[in-house]
Image 1 (cartoon, one colour):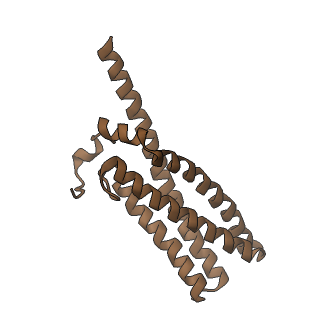
Image 2: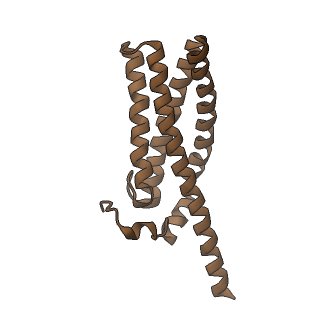
Image 3: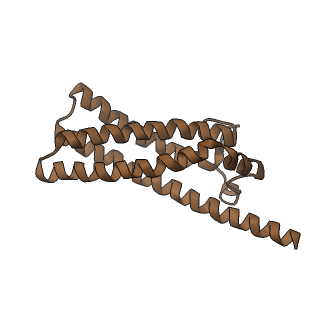
Length: 170
């Protein structure tokens, strides 16, 4: 089923009870939960190294390797995230609940991939490469914020569901 944005989508629950059960039962939820903070740590270290190079002109190789490693983490989290979406929602990407997060994720991946292409092809100077990395990192921060917001919404939804279930029992 294709995603169709509507006014109803804002009030629709993030997960059906069946999707919530699949989310809680799959190992891919744990994998995503481990990869996301690991990727953030790699991002934070890399950001410092990139800024160090841009400000003081030192550490180009360390900054470059950190960006390549960050990109590897990004690819890993995107692949495992697509598998997670398939298990939980029945489709690899663009499930209703994570449509816009996936859209922005593709922008993040495009910028990181452009960085790799420019690095290996020699298309950009070292300074231009670092600015491209910063653009990729800015979109990554936006995307991470989207996912943190969804995580918060899922927790609140879970609390409401638990509260409703307790009220039915009482």
